[in-house]
Image (tube, rainbow, N blue to C red):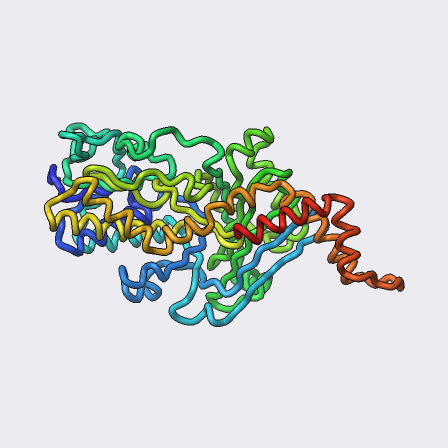
Length: 432
């Protein structure tokens, strides 16, 4: 293997493979390094990908990529021990090209994407841990791996090595260790179920899929949520909870997952499922406040390593941000190499590209949503209030029905002051 490359990309996840593929197509010599035995082996996600970001990178990827199902039902639910209040959107429009989103298996999808990069000329090196960066005259000039004689040189290094990116720290782009309140711990189970049962229980046909997010009393007040997604022959379900809040509450995430699974409203979907996979992973959580400096002399950072995850309260997106940031880093690297300037000043064009896309704009728009979602009342009092209001709305007991406003004030006032409800509602309106 050559010892010098134009660009080295560390991490063959979505961001890394997208960057390597973009660069290689320009004719540059690229090395993509992955610590796992195969790309995707160590990657964990609930499984929903907004894939149209791939349209210009891999035309007609919808007919080539190993997707599970096309999502036609999106929903968000509030759960108590006795009820589920579900807001659902369903449309057949999402089941027609160019589609909107799909569920994927990261082990299969990441391997496929890395293979696209290989076919474009990328040198893929797996089972290799990058331990450090090589510096020369204030520039990053390559990487040091754990292999004997494992130093590889490059004019540019792109760090796509995950949420706890040690390389971003070593490059001086992230000045401190990640604190627990900045990240979440995700725990996922994959349950095997016959296709017929999945379609029947979720009201689906053929390759149609559904994606549901949940909050509720099962979280014991811990900042986080749960998810339930349909795959071809399996269900992906799990929780994502803030690590700092988890430590403060002194509860185990596995206990919260079991509590979620034990809810009667969830049991009817997963009953009879056989556990075939169990995994855990850290994810960025606080959006723009977690994003480090994105570039330096001879170095850029992309994907989870850059903290590119955004939630608007209804969707939790990261994979499309990883792909888009990988492409942006790749285009920046190509232009820098063409101009013969890999300084921080030249690579600052990467920041400009990020700011111009949905990545930077959404990070800015939803920068305060994390604080709204951290409100413990969203997981305790409000699910109970909504349950009681719904009961009153649909219950007939022979008594006159009160006006809706009076009923809401009466029920909510027993749990939360109306002033607090107004303040919480204002925060939701302002930031979400």
